[in-house]
Image (tube, rainbow, N blue to C red):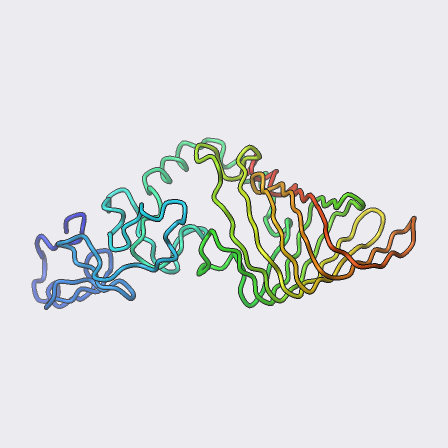
Length: 282
C-alpha cells in the first residue's frame, strides 16, 4: 500500500490475498468499488477523502474554517493519527473517524526524550483524589464537544480549597438536574493548558441544583431553582466564579450557629491541589 491505502501489489497467496477483505490498516475493503469502510463512512484512497463529512461537532468555533470534514488524517497519513471511535488515551483523542487529532511522531518523541517521565509518574497523584463526576450525561463524555458544558442528572464531588468569602472548605459536592454552558479555548496556545498563566472563560446556567461544602468551621450549602454563572479558569487548578441564583442557603457554623435565608449572588474561588501537583510533577 501507499500512505493513503492504494493497493500497489498483492504478494504471497494470490487467492487468499485477493479474497481477504481486511486490507490497509485493517479497514474493510470493497473490491468492486475500491473503497474502504471505516466504521460508518466509506473512504476513497485515490482521492484521500471520505464520501461524506465527519460530525460537525468536531469543528472548533474559534477556527470553524480551518478543518475539512472530508479529509483523511489531515492530508498527512504518515505523521498523523485518525480519530477512530474507542481509540486514544484521553477524551481529546476519541471521536468518529476522519479528523486529525495530533502528530503521532511528536507523541513518540515526547515520551522517548522525557528522561524524567518514570520519576514523575511515581510522584503523580491519582486524579480520582481531586474528585469525580457522574450523571446521565456529563461534559467529560466522549460525545460532548470540548467547548460544550452539558451535565444532566449529575453528581459532582470535588476536593481542594473552596472559599465563598465567608467559609473555607476542603470538600465540595453538587447535585443537579441540568447544567449547560460554553467553555472558551485557552488564551495562549504557546502555554500548556494546565498552566496557571493560561486562562479561559466559561459561562452557563443551571436548573434545580443543590451544593454543599464541608470545611474547618462546619457545613454550608444552598439549593437553587435556577442560576446563571461565569467563571475564569487559570490552568486546571484555580477557578474564580460568580453565580447569580434564585434559591435558599443554609450554613451550620460551629462558632456562629445555624444560618438560613434566601440567596441571590455568590462569588467563590476553587483551588485543586491535585491538579496543580500533577501539572508540576505528573
